[in-house]
Image 1 (cartoon, rainbow, N blue to C red):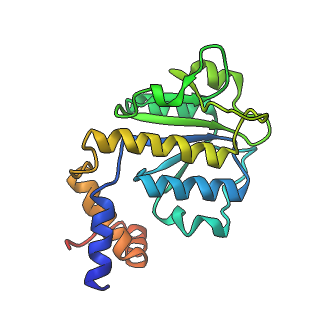
Image 2 (image 1 turned 180 degrees about the vertical axis):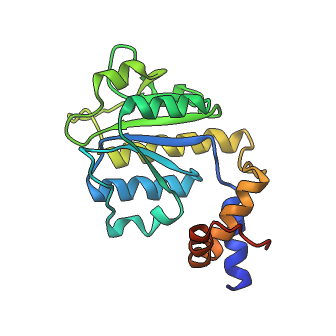
Image 3 (image 1 turned 90 degrees about the vertical axis):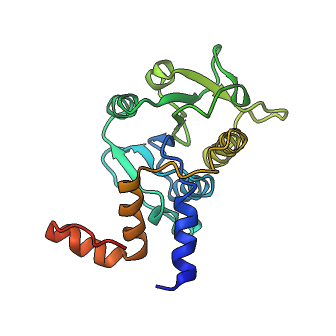
Length: 207
């Protein structure tokens, strides 16, 4: 492990946002999943969430640039379970859904603990998920088509969240807890060794 690599990993961890995430409801196409995780990594999302599609595991395409290594994808069996887990952690949930109560995605506050909820490629969000969300948000469209590809929509919204958080100084200070930071630092630096230690039930050595 070179010093340059170690410094790069620390620089990324220094800007990770533990209270910004996405929830993907049955988004299953590998290129979309991969592109969304790549955007998550770019803005500092710590981990992403998804609701499984008929029990199928998530798969990724080459477009991810290995983003799934840096942004774990937590799988939930149902949307209700995902909501319960995220709400218990204090997240507000903004659903990308064109409804009567939808507001411009730039009008909401992403400096609060925020989860951006996106729906499946063909049919979008379930009505239950859209109704249960704290707010519905939309990206204004000026053309004939009324929506963007799910991965593009995710990127547009995530970078607005990044803009708001940068303005508020969220990227200027480390926001991970010390124990969490040290754990991730070791796992990112030494993934094989970390896996062996986990299997043995042993703690990671100090760096």
